[in-house]
Structures are given as structure tokens and as C-alpha cells.
Image (cartoon, rainbow, N blue to C red; front, side, top):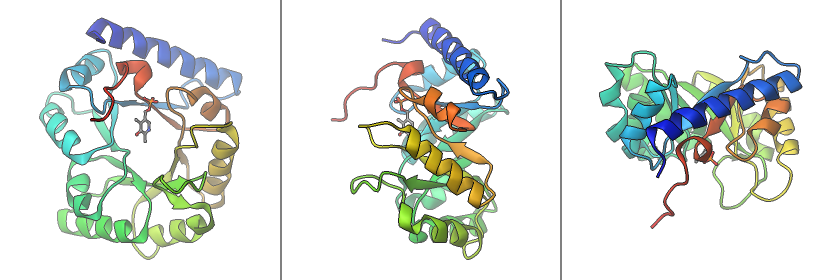
Length: 227
Ligand SMILES: *Cc1c(COP(=O)(O)O)cnc(C)c1O
């Protein structure tokens, strides 16, 4: 079990490694935002991280986010929640209601549903386009070949507040070419946010220009295997 003390110590260690990776890459040590991925871990773990000064969190399931986060907002006005997991269109409205950032916009139908939910609720969380940089069949994200057109449509046709891109490289192999590809794609579209890098590869992502890293296991410990 990961205790509150472990969470505080893990956060401090990750923050130090982020700052060191920035310095190695000749970047400002404050240039990278840590998104603490609390999925599957109880609300107590989020509270321990908040007590240790962490304010930005990531959840991959909307329902779990709804159970854990709204109750914490009043006491933690600077807290921000990123939805980072694959979204069904019927969850668009709940996602727009609960999130400050939605990182997983990956297809026209979802973009349309998110735009519709924004119009109805008046909330406009920042949006990232998730790119399937490895073109893996089982993975969410827009395929490489469709990425340019979809990024333009998300902005133009759907009017989403798109601020950047997100990717999850294939488990096998060097992630760096995937991170570099995402950086170049974002630059072509004038997008400043690059959400890339997880527990195992965030330093490589920082070397390739990540502005946000999403770290779960290295902060909160191992997740129970899915049932
Ligand atoms: C779970 C998850 C993470 C965190 O992964 P760790 O390897 O535990 O750091 C990052 N991004 C996404 C999209 C995730 O689903």
C-alpha cells in the first residue's frame, strides 16, 4: 500500500526528476507541468497529494472522476482535473461538466458531441487532440494520416478550444520518435501544449519538448489489475 508519506515523497522525487530533465534539455525547470494520474486510487490518495502541494490531476474514466473530484473543489480552488482516457460520445456532457481539460479528443463524432455539450452547459474546458502516433489498432487517438485534417476541423468546424496534442506511444520500442513527431505536428498547427510522457518515459518526453507529463504509478503506486 502507498501511504500518504510515500505519496508526498514520490511527488517530491518526480518533481526533482522533472526539473533535472528540463535542465538537461536546456529548458526552464518550471517549463513542465506534472499531471498526477490518480485513476483507480481512492479519493484519500488525491487528498494526500493535494496536501503535498499537487493541484493538477488526471483521471481516465468520467464516472470515477465524478465520484472523486467535485467534492474537493470548494476546499481546493486551484485544483484542476484533466480527463485523459478514451471517451464515449454519451459521456461528453459529463466530461465537459467535470473536467478543466479534456486530453482525449480523437474523432469527429466525439468532437461534435463535446462541442454540443459546451454549447448546452456554457463550460469550455481546454481540449487536446489525442494522436495514435503508433497507428495501433487497439489504441484510441486519431491516426497519423488523419491528424492534420482533424486538428483543423476540431478548431474550425467544431469550434473547440484546442490548445495542444496528447499521445501514448507503443509500449514496445523507443518512444522518442513518437514524441518528436507530436512536437512537429503541434508546431505545424501553432499549438503550445504537448501532453506526453508517463512514469516510464517522462524524461525522454521532456527532452522532446513535453509541456505536460502524466505520471501515475511513480506517485501513487501500482494499480490493481483490471478485473
Ligand atoms: C494511466 C495513464 C497514465 C499514467 O501511467 P503511469 O505509467 O502509471 O504513469 C498516463 N496517461 C494515460 C492516458 C493513462 O491512461
